[in-house]
Length: 165
Image (tube, rainbow, N blue to C red; front, side):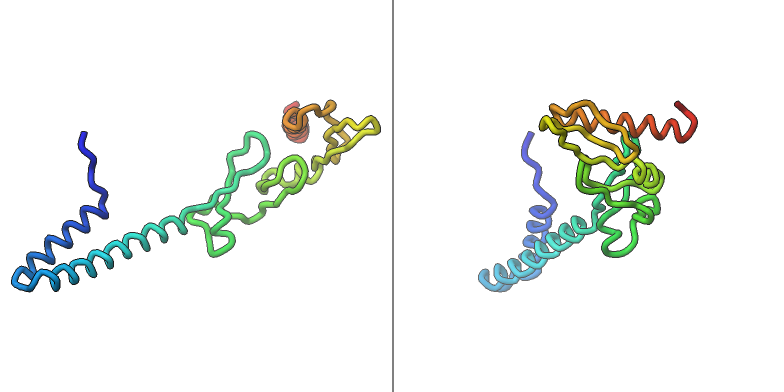
């Protein structure tokens, strides 16, 4: 399958063809210089459009609560309003540092206030993850294990709060 030309290359050739047709009676260097100016302007416009589209794309941040699919647009919260109302940053909280650095949605913010994790180094130099409610993970030989245990604790705590567990 032959390589397809990019839209920029197709546009360049179209502008060059139109320019050559319009100035067919002019000496070649003049036509070429004019065509090159038009092509350069076209390429600049395409680059500007691509840069604008890149800068307008959402910068989505997701809720740290396991299983929550809510997200907000960080870029829009810093400079204007979100593209979608569901991407609003209103009520979101930043959680850092410790187990997970990120953001928690308004639905789970109160749960995180009661279940904020922190690392606890024991006397024998072993590490466990402690929760603000008093829960503690098994000894953390691997950080991911303790974090997964804490997330399981979070889900169980949410179930208790809703009367599900």
